[in-house]
Length: 465
Picture (spheres, rainbow, N blue to C red):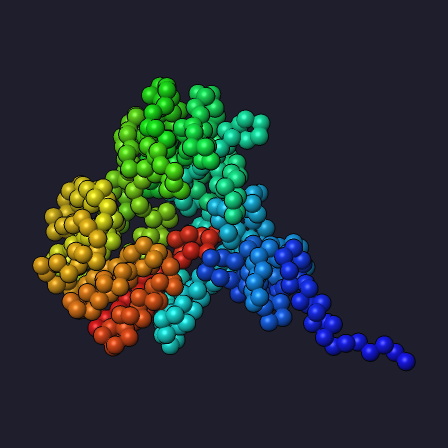
């Protein structure tokens, strides 16, 4: 007589497998907004980086909870039709981007779908009108800015690159396929100069040493470049002569600066920047205007797509020239100033005094006299406005708008609101608050891919009363 198997034994074996270090087989069915693959093992969810929808793989469990786990790719059993070979040889290690292994067209589809899902699930919008995503001509070589932490290899060589995924170990780079190719020679050669000068590289664990980061920036239209070293104490022996050598070696380099950051912090830049050679800024052409951009200025990294998104906003607004436009979280006026040419009055609000100084300088540079800028927190300045804007442009940080900003907007009731966001979840949350009582209606959303090869997506949402 054959042995009768206890039906609970299979369950026990399954439970035994659901432990840290074990291998499980999953098929990826979705991607999170942070870029990780989402698969199921039975009724449990497994999150795995470096995956794409359709991959079937063996995954090693690394952090296990009763209903879900985080895993690490062990072996691809069957690759997805959307999977490709990355352009970068260290893409599997480097934390600079997450999606080089995914076909670009599928990246775009996924990002648009992220916006739709956030609006439906978090915002409660039924079948939202989300346009085809705006994309640039190239998914590589687009970045106008790069900041690289510096370190020392086991053999004593200076390293510059991005941190390895989920660590503070530097993946050494001599070129990066995402940054503007004109910056690559500086990345490869400047670290050799730092080695030759015997400048001490900063050690974050001991808070010793000097040179923390190498920051490179380029005007995509002008070709002008900036080189900035972030240092602990704001001084380096021999930097003046080395800066002059760099200016001679790189004809498009217009300025070399030192930024001082003496804090124990993950923030890259400190508050003090000193120009050592050339100019403290580069010139860039954007939306038909001239902008002066400093080493630590916030300026979208994909110039051409940012310009395309601005054009889409202007087209949707169909400005007639008699409007009052308020640009909250205005930065250096990247959107305020181009739109100011099409309205009667433009007002920018910004918490960073340095950004407001740059916005005012850029307005003067372009002969724009109908734009004014105020320093302070939006939630405090907005209720104090002496005029009622016809249009409010919101472009807050990833965390979204403070609730008091939403409440004030519902009180002053501008005719139209444009909400630009780099995080679909907070965008959906805030749009729900603005629309929940019928005060505003969401007409359409324009997503844009400002960050190819990453999971990040930008979107502009248009609201009318």
